[in-house]
Image (cartoon, rainbow, N blue to C red):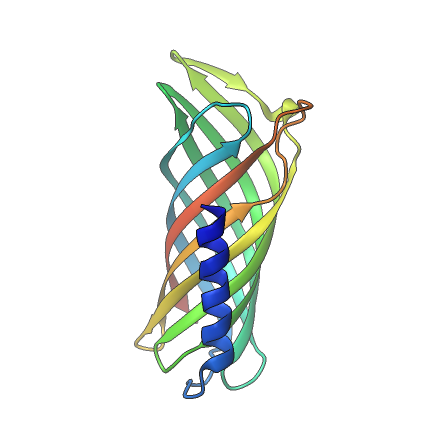
Length: 189
């Protein structure tokens, strides 16, 4: 999985560096909502499967030149995953730090990362809620890559994958990080 993400990122960089007929990069505020599917990669042997979550927030797009832009903002994200019949729920605040490149008037690629702060991390086991927040490293960060489509100069639809790099577990010898596939819709003001 890591190899395919790295190869996708390399492909995106090659497309960014080799493209020449891009439209003007947009600038301004964007309201964003997303559905996401998350899992937690770990070395403890516990297999998690993706579960439905969401994200809402706002971004600001800073044009760098006629084809490229820097995107940052603030979002509230709920990442959910399953381990068997149990469910994990993490709520966090995230700041995207993305470079975007317009391939043409409608299509763009994204690459960069994110910084996050975990507000709450809990699990549901047999109908009982267990709070893991105190056993969780609160600061999260990772890499993000994706692509998107701009429709009618106001609507933007993106598909992104974020690979968490921070160890969320305070338990020694256990590494746990979030992986998120998101489909988002943004309205550019």
